[in-house]
Amino acid sequence: MNHQPIEGFSKLSKQRKIDWLISEYLSGDRSFEQILQQYWNNDAELQKLHEEFSENTISNFYMPYGIAPNFLIDGKLLSLPMAVEESSVVAAASKSAKFWIDKGGFKTTIINTKKLGHTHFIMNVEPHKLQHFFNFKLKKKLFETTDEITANMRKRGGGILNIRLIDKTAEMPNYFQLKASFDTVDSMGANFINSCLERFGKTLREEVENDENFTSEEKNSLQIVMNILSNYTPDCIVRAEVSCKIEDLKDESGIAPEEFAWKFRQAVTIAEIEPFRATTHNKGIMNGVDAVVIATGNDFRATSACAHAYASRNGKYSSLTHCTIDGGIFRFWIDLPISVGVVGGLTNLHPLVKFSLALLGKPSAQELMSVLAVSGLAQNFAALRSLVTTGIQKGHMKMHLFNILNQFNATEEEKQYFVNYFKDKTVSHHEVISKLRELRDMNL
Ligand code: MEV
Image: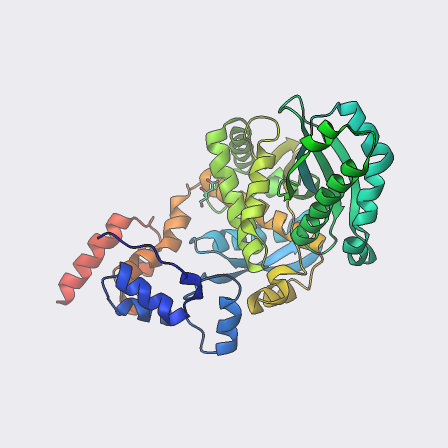
């Protein structure tokens, strides 16, 4: 069936939007309305709040919200909130937390908290002349004209740290940047940074226009292409690490601690040198990071983009974690560039985000960076631990069992039967289906 475009969809009421979707795309089947409605909140205020987070909202999309307890981080015992749909992520985090709790736990260090943004512009001008204008005139004006925008942030201890002119003409004709660094304290700072940058764009135009040293050709050649923060923040970075004596690396699979340490380090080295493995390895890390990013109301697209860009910083995509074995000590760590906030955005609005932040003891943005790096490291430890011992499917399929059973509308009794049945076996999709068939045939 050919569908017709619609004008003014956003202006329709929620009910009208649903009616149109059902008649246009769902063959008039009203049962789809029921699916949407069952996720509406009974509390009208709360429903409205969610609808106003985004546009054209017709329902809420639930994700499991779980807790990984027993994380000892810099001497504090925390329970991590995780919003994630993938089976076994929360279980893996909890398992790692438990493993490290009696070995000193996780230690973190904030390496830097600088965020970046650029005004990208084109100007047909001699780079030295522009640099002179920047050094002796523009830079000061950029600070002055953003004075009002930065006043509050400066009161909180942040603001614009520095602004530089970058000559990019070797890569693209007449391309320059105003590259600014910011401290946004406890906020992620996207709106603050972008407001400053948009003001930079205006000031640059005004100051070039009013400067008699530029020719009219030079002035006319100026184009402000865009003013935008960079989600790549290699200088907003935290390290999380664990370490212990090799003999303490006891695993329930029975593998000898030395062999475990050696295989584990090999697995990390493979991720360091092989991009195909590094991608999966880092995806596993982001399972842990993003689940906490979402639960704390931060932007997981930004944190993922940044982590993967950083993983490619040396020209080849590589592991975010590293491991050494030195003098009988096993050490495993992550350097994670990550920009997050604990004020602004969803943090004061979404009730579950408020819960998450309260659960974490109302962390500062830096403390949250630490928690996120730990969550990524813990997730990677759990994945590699399984991969180099029993294999990933044992734990993964155990958690996935309920998904398979739910697909076949299994009863509580059937679920219980399968939990017992697979207690000492690896779950396989095929075996669940054939056993379920057997069970149901027997009961007929
Ligand atoms: C699955 O979501 C993530 C893993 O594949 C990560 C890894 O292989 O390291 C288990």
